[in-house]
Length: 166
Image (cartoon, rainbow, N blue to C red; front, side):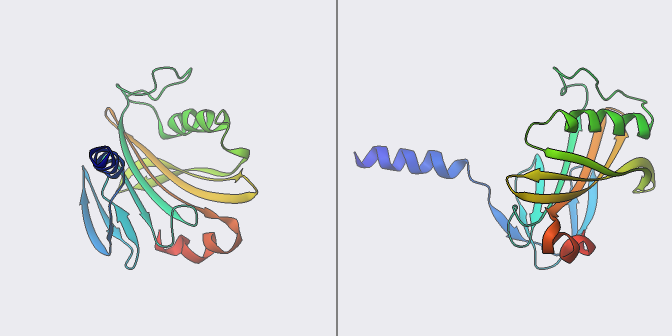
C-alpha cells in the first residue's frame, strides 16, 4: 500500500509545473524577453507562462510552434511565406471555432512590429464562465516557426492593472 502511495505521488508531481520568480532579461528558445519583476514564470520548456496572481487573474503566454508539425486537422493552416494579415486571419478562424471562447469578439486586428519583424496584433474579448476576459495577442511567422506572445486577464480590474507589465 505504501509503495502505491509513493508511485502515485511521483506520478502526480512529475506532471506539475514548477514556478520561479522572474524579473529582467530572459533568454528563451530563439527569443529574448524582459520579464516583469515580482511575477512568477513556469519552467515548462514548451510554453512560457508568466503570472503575478495566478493564471486565472492574469497571464502572459509565450509559445513557438513549428507550422510543419502542427495544425493537422485545421481547414486553414499557417504556411511559410504568408503575409502577417493572412496569418492573423488563420488564427482568428481557429479562435472563432474554439468552444471555450464564449461570445468571442474582435476589438482590433492590425499589423505590428515584433522584434523588428513584421507580424500582427489582435485584441479580443471572450467569456469564460461568467468572467469576461480581454487578450492582447502578437503573432509572427518566421520561416517554419510561428511566434505567439499574449496577455490575458479579466476585463474587470486585472486587465488594465497589469497590461503595462506586458
